[in-house]
Amino acid sequence: MEGGGTEKKKMQEEENINFESMNTLPSFDFNKVKQVDDKVYISLLEELEEKCNPELFLNAGYDRKRFEVVNSIYGELKQRGVAKDEELTDLRNRAIDELRIHFSTKKKYDYLLKYIDPKIYIAMQPYDAARVAQAEQYYNRLNEDRRDIRALEQLEQEAQAFIARKNTEELEEAERRELEEKKEAERRKLEKKEEAEKRKKEDITSGIVLLALIVIIIIAVSFGKL
Image (cartoon, rainbow, N blue to C red; front, side, top):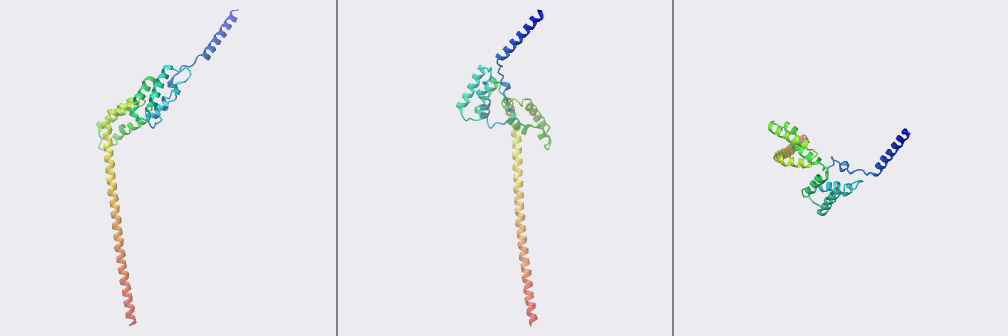
């Protein structure tokens, strides 16, 4: 009897578990929504429209408070219409703080890497140890915060002078190359001109020699007839 009672009790517990699993909706976790970290967006507007679309928050068991927040953000976004990135950072920051949405950092990361990668400065001559050290500090922060768009923006602000110096050097290098290319083009143009003049003189000389030969032949033939 005891065995039968135990078995019956076990079956009832399993039925209750199955019933509960069928009637309990999964809790909504926005972190499970697919995020494409490596995607490069044309603009912040495009990214906000994609990641703050209220439809993403209407999963089974969704958080109504979160839905109200995203609905508010999306509504404000649509009211503003076409706007520059800097005009939408407040909405982006709300989405980060209130919805824990991750915003793509690839574009900003790749941009900063072009200026603060220590390898760039290690290869420069003459070697500047202080500049290499500064680049390494920025580089370390870049990789520590590579998934935090606001941290990368802060890093960009702090590294403005460092980036501007590199931009100035690149501009000067581009101007130097342009000047060298211009001088090379002028040199080739002059060489072609001199070569053309040389051929012209050679042609004139050849013409004179040929004419002289013809005259000599004519004179020789004339004397021969006499």
